[in-house]
Length: 322
Image (cartoon, rainbow, N blue to C red):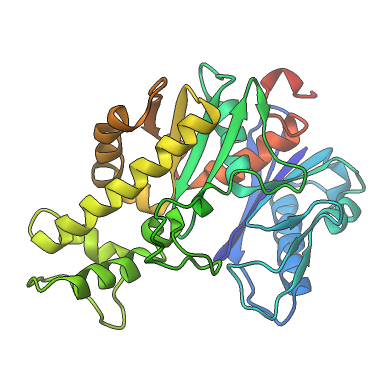
């Protein structure tokens, strides 16, 4: 058996599969917001136990497990340290050690969620290219990157945090991490409403977009696209920053393919991907990669975590132990 976990700020997903990758058991539950990081750890373990029960397997039958999560990581400790997406009172979330104890194995692979995304894309791709990236545009922005057949994790597991690349040197928007001018500060689902409010205050246009209301969110901007000049202006500005961020990704890693996922992209592909495709040739001096929406939907990360377990963290199908 193999297991995979997607630990997000909102939900925990767990799956258990056989050696062919057929999912036999699964679980999904809300991610706790406290009182401590141990509560999050217990939610992960409980999700795995439930998935094992549904698969008709005991935890000690699991040969290997992959865990995909938000960061930042302390890889040596196998834990998340001071997560930006959970309340400040949650400081440390142990993951690797507790999972190893549950499954009685040392084959537990911890990845940034976007790194798991690129592992999943590689594993499930018909061509399985050695140079590719998975980009998520969701509540945050990040990328998993594979170069020359190797998935880049970084010494601390935090490679691929492209959402924290500076795209605006003037830094008019502050990122959730506390730094100014980051890509994520403009184009992530959490920050699009803030950026729209900034653009609204800069102009004097009339709009049907409910800017400044208590429940104003990114979906409101996209819902008014095509019928509202202000909404179209916001989306045009988002396209500029998104294309700049993807161009930086291309120049840094030279991927042949960039698969894009995350709620913002999945729910608005024409408004998000098409404008990037139009702008990239003007911004990229090297090969312009194929930019496409992930075919794995919102399960790409948990399927990548499972693929990590099956391939010793690589996404290379030849590594599957049967």
